[in-house]
Image 1 (cartoon, helix red, strand yellow):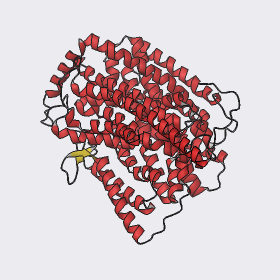
Image 2 (image 1 turned 30 degrees about the vertical axis):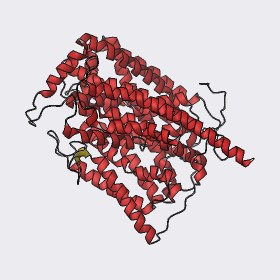
Image 3 (image 1 turned 90 degrees about the vertical axis):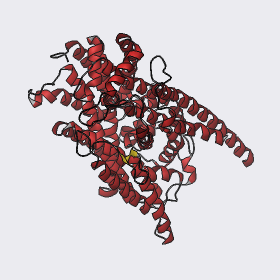
Image 4 (image 1 turned 90 degrees about the horizontal axis):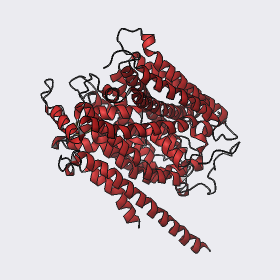
Length: 73
Length: 542
């Protein structure tokens, strides 16, 4: 689970810092060059990924807490 | 530019300004706690803010008026390179997701108000804590000054106090009034004032952006036309440099710069004291994690806003000072009354961060300079009093800065501030995860980063300036052009790591660590975590 969380959080770094992968004009979207709409799209993607990471993390914490509680009793 | 004062726009602007002024003063009564004379109350809003208030507060804090003016201005000036603000604000949230909750927990357990408090507690070093505090104050001051520059840009375009030949007092009067009012309600209401005003600011900004991004392209004939015109404008060769003005997508050579600027800025953002102040005012860990998922909404807005820079070119806005491009675009495109709303949004957008920044800087001074070095036995009430006074001084300082010096000075210092504040990253974030670093090594690394960054930035020339001409320079050893702050940061980390090995080998005293591992994961409700202060009256629910 923690690996998935880490992947969700690392993905935006890879995508955004690899500028060469998106530094181009075409294809355009309603007239906006690729360079711009792609990055704005990543705002949404990274939001989704962070939310997934948050939910997974919550579940992970709960699972661990249950586990710990069970062991203490 | 239309001549004279734009009366309707000015009227609308004044209306909103008066409304937020009233809110600012009333904020003191909002969610008031019993013990209002503690720094937790005045400086952190009682550490009681929930998800939405924190969202507005952080949004209002990070996406400042200066951002709204400067990002499109950068696009207007050079095209794609200015868009780095978007990837920067994309990667900042996954980043803070990892470390801010830990900072929140340890701060609550030990009552830390500033990052320097934490550094002192973690490394047992007043010197390191002082270094972090001074860096924070130095980096924040020009930032406050730039908020004033943002207000000035709006005033200029509205035709208030614009002309060269007006008396300096008349010219600066509107700015003086705005700042006087800001100072007064920050003094009386503390962090609650900007938190409440942030609601108004962000609502206005969202409305303005939504309208602008639909209305202006329709008037200009669609995005196709806009980008075609912008592309033409950028390909024209600038006679001064012999290079084209800019590009719609960064060329090969600019990509390192783009990436390092985005990364360096992202690492630096939550080192700024005002970001931390807003974070620590939240009620629990969940609030912070949830916010990392909803704050990107602002990034989307920022991206759309950046596109306005292209629209300004397509609309034929011609200004000498790029900062005026967007206000001028609004004035040209919108009916007067809506231009007024847009200007009000920018002006109020300057007040919120300026208030939070001055509070954050004041907290740093009070906790880590006044209490640590001048008066160790200061009571909480005394701390609050000092903080209030310092918040005034900080604002006056910023005002004097803007009124007496050239605007470019403030911009240069803000650029330097970004480089400087990044150098506190190893001590703060490093410290949140490990106690391995040696405190003296951290100080040495910080010093090296500061010196390299300052010298390197000083040496950058641009067509218009001999020094501080930009924030990018060749990275030694790699040969690409990159963000100076990032290079300084890498140097900083290398020095810190090497010296830590050396200092550990010679068994230099480590200092005492007052935190324990459990502190970093504690949440509200756990033993030893101070719950929010008891409210005096039933607070508003949210």
